[in-house]
Image 1 (cartoon, rainbow, N blue to C red):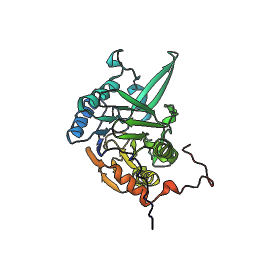
Image 2 (image 1 turned 30 degrees about the horizontal axis):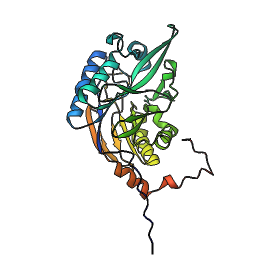
Image 3 (image 1 turned 60 degrees about the horizontal axis):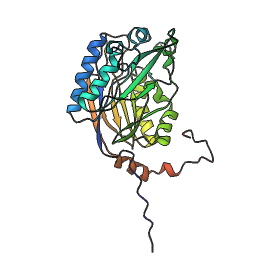
Image 4 (image 1 turned 135 degrees about the vertical axis):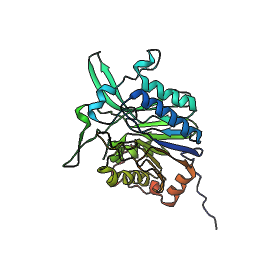
Amino acid sequence: MSTITPTPRPLLLKKPVKLACVQLASGADKAANLAHAAAKVAEAAAGGAKIVVLPECFNSPYGCEFFPSYAEPLLPSPPPAESSPSFHALAAMARDNGVYLIGGSIPEVAESNGRDKKYYNTSLTFGPSGALLSTHRKVHLFDIDIPGRIRFRESEVLSAGSAVTTVELGEYGRVGVAICYDIRFPELAMIAARRDGCFALVYPGAFNTTTGPLHWRLQGQARAMDNQIYVALCSPARDTTAGYHAWGHSLIVDPMAQVLVEADENETIVSAELDGARIEEARSGIPLRDQRRFDVYPDVSQ
Ligand SMILES: O=C(O)CCC(=O)C(=O)O
C-alpha cells in the first residue's frame, strides 16, 4: 500500500526569532520620550530580541489635542535631523542595536503644495542598518462614542492612510503592521496573512480602560486564531496623571491563539521566541488554508 507524503511547505518565519514589545512610559517631553525609548530598545536588544516593537504615539501623550504640536514631517537626511527628530532617533535605535524596529507610531505632518497640512498617525519600520523599510499610516481612525465612558474622534484632526502594510524583515520573513483601531478590521489582517504570507501581525496600540478589558486580548487572539500566525500588541504603560489612560497589557499570541506573554499596566518589556514550525503545526492540524469556500464567499485577500 502506498502512502502519500505531503510536500513540506516553506516556513513563513524562516528562522526562530525573539520579538520584544516595549511597554513604554511616555510623558509630555518629546526629547525625553525619544531618549527613554532608545534606552528601552537597547535593553530589549541586550535581552536577545531581534525584532523590537514600540507603542502607538510613544513620543507624545495620546490625544487629538496633541497631534498637531507633536507632529513632524518624515524627512530623511540631508535636511537637518532636528526637523524629524523621531525619524532619526528610530533609525539610530535600529542601527545601534542591530535590530528590526517597528517604531510604534508618531504623529506625522505632511504638506501638499506647501499649504495644506495633513496629520497622520504613522508607524515607521527600520532595519538593522538604520534604513527605513516601511511606513504605515493608520487606516481606520479611532472614532468612537460610548456614552458616559469614552468619546474619541481622531478624524477631527487626522487623515486616514490608505494602504495595507506588510514589510519584509530580511532573513526572517514578512510581518503585517497596523495601528490600534486597525486591529478591529479583520480584513487588513487577512490580506496581510494570506496575500503577503506574513508570519506575524504587529499592532502598536493604545486601548483604554473601557475597551481594553473588553477587547484588547480578545482582538489579539482573534487575529491569531483567524490567520494562524503570531500577533503582537504593544501598548504604552498607563499614566493615570494623563488625560488618556492606556490599557497597557502588551502581549504576544501564538498561532494557536494562546497568549504567550502579557504585561500588566506598568512599564515593562515582554518578549517571546517565535518559531515558524509552530505556524506550520497550527495550519496542518487545523487546515483552514485548504478548506476555504471561495465558491460561497469572496476572497478578500485577492
Ligand atoms: O479600538 C479601541 O477600543 C481602541 C482604539 C484606540 O485606542 C486607537 O485606535 O488608538
